[in-house]
Image 1 (cartoon, rainbow, N blue to C red):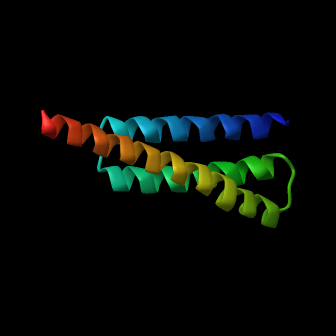
Image 2: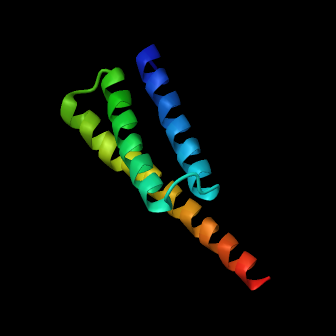
Length: 92
């Protein structure tokens, strides 16, 4: 793995962890934070692909499928747990 790829992968991880925390702690509107997290995941995985020396089309596919997929799943999990927490608080 090249240094550029490693840096962009680390940024991807930070975007995902930051997005998860922002949704769970309600640091912003959950849907807006999720959208920004998904966009950030796509961009950082695209740049990761380019940093690995892949062609533009392959890097774009990796960004959309892997970056967008992981970010979408993470955002949906955070939204689910946030909603469950809100329901349990309202029930008390």
